[in-house]
Amino acid sequence: MQLRYNFRVYPTPGQQLALARAFGCARVVYNDALTVRETARREGLPYVTDAELSKALTAAKKDPGRVWLGKVSSVVLQQALADLNTAYRNFFASVTGKRKGTRVGAPRYRSRRDNRQAIRFTKNARFQVTAGGKLRLPKIGDVTVRWSRGLPSEPSSVTIVKDAAGRYFASFVVEVGAELLPEADTEVGIDLGLSTFAVLSNGKTIASPRFLRQAERRLKKAQRVLSRKQRGSANRIKARLRVAKTHARVADMRRDWAHKQSTTIIRENQAVFVEDLCVKGLARTRLAKSVHDAGWGMFVRMLEDKAVRYGRAFSKVDRWFPSTRMCSVCGVVGDKKRLHVRTWTCTCGIVHDRDLNAAVNVLAAGRAERLNACGGAVSLPA
Image (tube, rainbow, N blue to C red; front, side, top):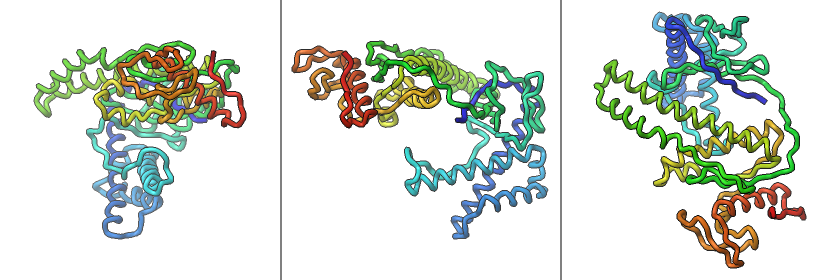
């Protein structure tokens, strides 16, 4: 399987200028190719193939108005065309119904004001990690890398990213084998929430860190300062970076926390079951800020990816499954429970904690689905 290893890089001022030139050239090539295809579509001409775009790029380097494209690595420009081709393939697959998930829109033009700028080097570019631990990039130089761990294998490509906070990262794509963990004799169902981030069927609870809520006061102050700066001024650029760095710090803390929690759950359990929540729908309610702050979608994706990597079972329970209002003891489905109802009593006399009961039901439903309910013994934990 392929994994990404991200590391912070610290280019010199001269290297930053070279990277800015590469970002700009890749953006121009992408936008030019998109214009060619959109023009052909509007005029009813045949679809412009990838090979034709590549030939047009070669010819553009000889054009006096595009001669500066030759100052950056040709691999960077070819990868910009590859990104556009991928965007079109995803769009066509989504329109025809071959691609699952949320519908993908048509490719859009890139802007120099985009929060994220990126270029990609493949093996053809002959990038390498030097003996001194620096990343050697063609026509850019040896860039300092802050290595937090070693690469498990030789990378097939590296993407240099500049985020909204002005930070630079190197994202390596490496091939790794499965790292099967010793089998565990426990399985767990997880009920995700807001007041408590997660309640596990074994009774364990994970408190919600609420990173955005904790940073709201600092973020509010930074945004107020930004709103008072004159557009186009140097002070406004500084204020915008201050806001972006605050958001980046919150996102980094949330991602790091989710990685640690998901790794612990995967290591301790042989099978993990979660409810298939409609996060996008919940993010359109009055709880939108809390839903985004929780990061349920990212957490579930991490669980799924790590289950595949470490040889664990993982599945999602249907979102319409009545996990909250069904008694985990007698199986009777009660009425809908409002959010403020944290405990309820079943007709059989059992008093349920709302979240723990839901987690136990998610575990039972996940087990039933895993065993395909074909005579298998699916019982609730004692």
